[in-house]
Length: 270
Image 1 (cartoon, rainbow, N blue to C red):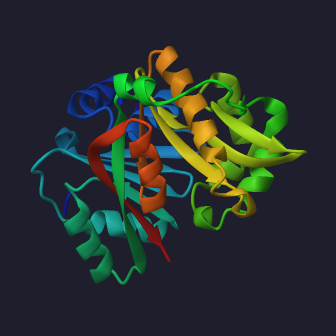
Image 2 (image 1 turned 120 degrees about the vertical axis):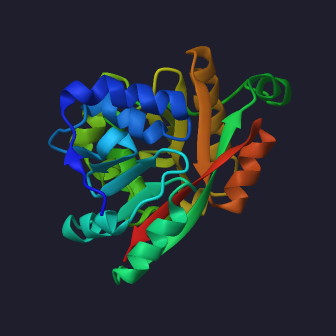
């Protein structure tokens, strides 16, 4: 069985270099968490195998997995980690999906798998086909955080995902550091629509947490937030990317200039 050891901070640059060289978009979550929090902190911990063929990071109750291409291993070490640490979500690439899902099944772990599609913005197409005049969404500020959390709690699709997105202290710290950035629309004192950056590294930013309250959907509110955020990112030298599994949501992003890039798997543990 493959052995994992807890990573140390003096390995940080080596691990980041490995992830950047492999695929800075595919492993955006990994990179952004390491750059923001380090390899180990109160909310995350990182383990590595010999020669860094396998790297895992636990972030809150989420587990991120990286493997080098064509690396085959006994995934029972990951299944045991999932059970021992009450992991709720596991994020990984197509390199590991088959062996990991077989291992979880053999370990009697009940889970559901969602295949996510990663898209990357075509900047030229974005500015050719979109009218950015008269957008109504506003940039997120500290005073908006409580209202954002209250609205996010009402989104059924987000139940059980991203516990940190409901933690006002986490959001406030992330906002102050410049990692949490986004746009929202209000109706009175209620945040009705939201789009933000869920992860970023030096030159890539992923759109995430895109939602609209159910009674306000199909009125263009999410598109307004997404257009403003995408424009903001491009003008600040980021390459916007996103992932989705909702066909309706996907159609919106294709229409505004995003194109297929890769896939990602997100497993929810029952």
